[in-house]
Structure formats: C-alpha cells, structure tokens
Length: 448
Ligand code: NDP
Image 1 (cartoon, rainbow, N blue to C red):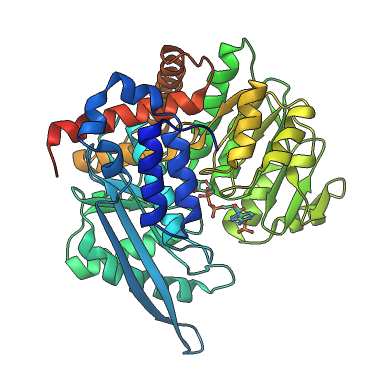
Image 2: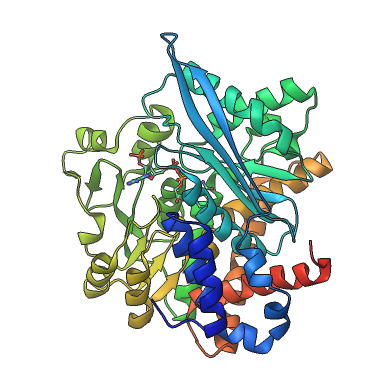
C-alpha cells in the first residue's frame, strides 16, 4: 500500500471498518485516496467539512429480492442492488450488472468509481450502480424477460429522469434494457425514455451508444499516444473480453490502423496473428450468443487457448475490456517486458494495485478506467439530452461529440497530473480532477 496522508489514512481505516469484507470497494477507495494528499493540503476545507468521509458513504443503498420462474416453472430467488452513491452533479447514473459474482462490494466499487468518471465527462450526472447475482448465460429469452420484469417491479420506484437513470454493464445489453423499459412503462403508465439509457434506436436510444465505451477508450489512448508523438498505425494490440466494450474497441483500433490479434471470454483466448475477424466476432457474440472458442472453427489459422492468459501474448497496446482485476502484477510486468507502451482500461478497475504500480513505474501511457472508459456514460448523457429534446442526432454528430469529450477528459487528466507534479500520471490526474468538481459541489450544497 502506498503511503497515505495521515488524516486520509484514518478515513480509509474507517471505511475498512464500516464496510467489512467488501474488498473491491476497499481497493477502489484506496486508489482514489492515495491521490488526494496534495489536494487536502491546497483545500483544507474538504477535511473540515468531511467531504472525503461523505463521498465514501453512499447516499442510499437498496437491496431487494428478485423472484422469478424458469421455463420449467421452477422458482428462483436472486438479489437485486442499486447503490445511489452521489448526486452532487446530477441524477445518479451508472449501469446494471447481471453476473453471478455480483454482491454489495462489487456494486459499491463500481458506484464509487462512477462518481469520479461521471464528473470527468463534464456532463451533469451523479454516480450510481446496480445489478444482480443473476446469470443470464444459458437462460432462454423468456427467462431473461421474466427476470428483468421482476427486477424492474422493485427498481422502478427508485428511478426517474431527474432521480436515477441506469444503463447496461456486464450481462445487460440492448435486450435486457428493452425488457426493463417495457416493464417500467407498464407499471408507471408513462413513456419516459430518459429513465434508462442504452435503449433501442427506434424507441429513444442514441446512435453511437453501443460503440461508445470501446470507441472512447481507443480515443483516449490515441490522445495519449499523440502526446508521445505516436499513433495506433501498425501497432499490435490485445483486447480482453469479447462483449460490448471489447468489440467496439477492436473496431476503432482497426479503423485507426492498429491490428488486434487476440480477444477472450471467461473460458479462453483466441489468438489470430493476421488480425481478428471482427464481423465473425459480432456474429458469434451479438447475434448467436456463442462462445469465443467457435471463432477457431471458422478460421483454421487462429488458435484457441482454453483458460489461456491473453497477457502472455506480446503486444504494443493492451486494452483490458472484460472485468475487474484481470491484470495482476506479474501480467503487468510481462506486458511491459514484451514491449507494451500503452494500456487503456475499457473495463472498470481491470488492473490490480500491483499491476498499476508496474505501469506507473515503467512510465508507459496508462489510461485508468475511470478516465478511459468514460465514453460510455458520456454518450448515455447525450442520449438523455436527446430524450429531453425529443430529438435524435446523426451518427457523425454524436461520434464527434464523443471524440471531443474524450479529448477533453484526456487533456484535463494530463494537465491536472502536470499541475500536481506527476506528469504523465493519468491515475493521479483522473482522481484529482474528478474529485475536485464533486467536492466543490458538495461544499456548495451544504451538509446534506
Ligand atoms: P459484456 O457482458 O458485454 O462482456 C463482458 C466480456 O467480458 C465477455 O466477453 C465476458 O466473457 C468477459 N468476462 C466477464 N466476466 C469475466 C470474468 N470474470 N473473467 C473473464 N472474462 C470475463 O460487458 P461489457 O463489455 O459491457 O463490460 C466489460 C467491462 O467494461 C466491465 O468491466 C464493465 O464494467 C466495463 N464498462 C462497460 C461499459 C459499457 O458501456 N458497457 C461502460 C464502462 C465500463 P463471458 O461471456 O465468458 O462471461
């Protein structure tokens, strides 16, 4: 653990005590608090007003039972969560994750990160996150629909375009958002598109929302490469996962002249030296919902490595886009040793603290998730703007806005890191820049 400022250390110890066993939440809090030493020196009022203690305590945490029936009539009980973390800058905004590993500690780590990420976008959105330990894998469409309906039957009372606006995350894509929106509309008798983002294009969705997180992460790293007078052109890249974020990261990297040679899912890794066939990945994952191993059935020169470690493959740019803590200290050291010069986190907190230290010590271009993957939520906020105007913008206009937002996030993180004496350290830049805006709003709002 890095040395914490003495006063901040006691705040962190309280967080550990108050939230026992929530290790991912502890990790996310520590990573932010490690950056705040120089901030409280400049702004003692944050300590006086206990801004850090308040930011670490969610404004509201909702946990609920989600009963549903499978196709055979068997009853199942899952647990639903919504953590409304901080509404200083706008309504709570953040995705819903459906994955068996979900528990309160995961939702709190994601919600905490979301506060600073949303602040970095420059858009009026607070931070929240939710989800369930439901596993959509292997379920029929009808089962997923019944689950989503049951989940929304409780969640709807906590939502609203001015209150809390969820979106997708792992296991929650367009299909799930559709079922949840349908149930919300039915219960409330209101066609209120601004209550969920990631909607279908014919019923209030925004162009570019599907692509936004992957495109945005790639734009962020493109900016970081530009600072180093470099580009994606000709670079060999790795993208872990093969879901929403991974697919559109691969697409943008290919558009910018890079070559992605490997992707993965939770069962294994596909390595295709001549470059990944993205149309096939989209067909397998977005249309047929199959495993990534099937890629090798169509491409005999591609290799499938069951339970493989994608970070063993040499690359110049790595884009972790699957899940938390997927790059440990050893993986990070291997990446650097093999010539990796940039890491862009499409996923949330995909690198362990040991791994982060390796990247920072090696001074590679390392874009932490709360900055690099903010394009998704930023485009969700653009979706909310279009809903409020009852308008829809073209793909080109919306993508230009996204690119501009990512350039601004990069510039703000870069400049903040310089200002605080740590040039090139986007972790420090993102944490400080994201924190100060929220902290100032909290001071302005008084003790609430
Ligand atoms: P998807 O569900 O579309 O895809 C997730 C991918 O990661 C799948 O290929 C999945 O494989 C793999 N994966 C998930 N869990 C694990 C695990 N424990 N071990 C190995 N592989 C795993 O999710 P998204 O693409 O939407 O999300 C990916 C990451 O990006 C998450 O960290 C999410 O929080 C983050 N993110 C997403 C945003 C969005 O707009 N969607 C916005 C910002 C961040 P399998 O199918 O085998 O489970």
